[in-house]
Image (cartoon, rainbow, N blue to C red; front, side, top):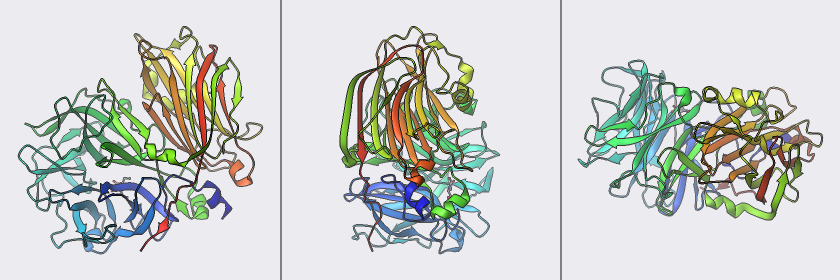
Length: 539
Ligand code: DQQ
C-alpha cells in the first residue's frame, strides 16, 4: 500500500514484511557482519518468534537469509527468544538463546553452525543437550528467565555468561559458569542484582577504557583502568550502570548505586529497546544495535504489512572521566550521503527560522553546531526535572522562550507548520556547570489519529571551561528521526508518521531559535541519503 511504501525506511534496517523486535547475536565473523533479530515469519503482530538473519559487509547494505533458528523443539515451541553469539576459543561461533516452551517457561539453549565452511552460516544445529540451562535453584521464576549475554572468560579460564531474571521477586543478572560452553552451573550469587525493579531483560555486559573510542573484546584480558558497563532493559527503555568488575568476588560493582531507577542514565531517551552490543574485530570498535518499535496503531501495522526496525548501528564508548557512554552512528552510514550542502556563520536571533534547502527532506543526515553568544542568560536548573524529562519537555517546549534556548531543528514540517517535529536544546545553569536538555517533541508530528506522540527528552552536562559548541546530528529516514546531541551524550530515537509523506507534499527543515539569547551556527552540513540495499535475497 501507499502507506507502507511512504513510511518504510530507506536505510534503517528492516526485513520486507512482518513483525520484528530485539536485535540478537550481532557479530563480525569471517569478513561479514551478522545481524539476527526477533522475527515473526507469519504476521505483523508479535508471536512465533524465530531468529531472522541478514549479513552485510558494511553494516549498511544487507543480504537476507532464511531464519537461523525456528521453533522446532518442545523447549522452544513458543519461540526462539533473544540471545547472543560468542566466538569460542577454536574460532567457532555459538548462539545462546532463550527457548520458550509450550507454556512459555524459559530455558537457555545452544546452537552451532551446521556447516562451518558456509561463509553465511545459514544453518544452525541445536544439539540434544538442550536446554543447557534450566531455571533451577532458589529464587527463580521460570517465566522470567531469559536473554543470555555474550560469554567472557574469567581469570580461572572458565566461561561466564549473565542471564536476565527475576530473583526473589527482584531484578538480577544471574551468573553462570562453564568449562566447555555447553555444561553450565549457576554461581551462588548474581553478577549484579537490584531491588528497585522486578525483571531485567536483555542484559549486556562489556568493558571499556575511559576516553578511548576503540572497543574492548570482553573475552580477552581486560587492560588496567578499564571500566565495565552493565546495560539492562526495563520500563520500555535501556538503562546502564558504569562500574568495575571485581574479579575476586566475580561481581559487577557500580561506581554509584542510584536507588531511584528513573535516574539511571539511558542508552537512548526515545523509542529504543533490547539493545545488544558486540566487539567489531574488523575495526576495533564496540557497536550497539537497538530495536525501535512502531508508534502508530496495530491496524496501521496491518495496513503497512511491517512493524519494527533497528536503529542505526552505533559505535559506543566511554567518555574520558568514565562517567557516561557516548554513541555515534557507524561511519559506514556516511557512504549513503550525496548532494551535501553547507552553511557557515548563521546568526539566530530570538524568533529566527532558517530553512535548510537543497537536500531530500525525508531521507537526510543533518549535522549542526550551535554556539551561544553568551551563556549569561541561562535559566537556573532544577534537579527535580531529571525525574521526568518528558514532562519537562512538554512544559518547556519549543514555543516557550527561555534565557538560552530553545534552539534546534524543526523537521518534517508542512508549509503552514501544521505538522512538524522539533529536536532542540535548552541550556540551564546548575551549581558549577551547565545542564543541557535535549528534546525530541513529536506532539505535532502528524495530523493522523491513533499515533503515540510523546515529547522525549534527556539531560547532559556541559562544561564551559572545555567547550563552547553544542552539536546536533539527526538522521531522518521517512518514519525515523534519530538524533545525537552533544557529540553523542544524549541519543533520541523517534518514529514519526506525517501526513505529508502520504500526500507526497513537501516537508521542510529549519533551524530555529526561540530563546532570548542569540545563538550562532558556526557550521551546518546536510546531505540527502541514498537508499541502502536492504533485502537482497540470498539462498
Ligand atoms: N523480547 C524477547 C525476549 C526479551 C524481550 C522476546 C525484550 O527474549 O526479553 O521476543 O523485548
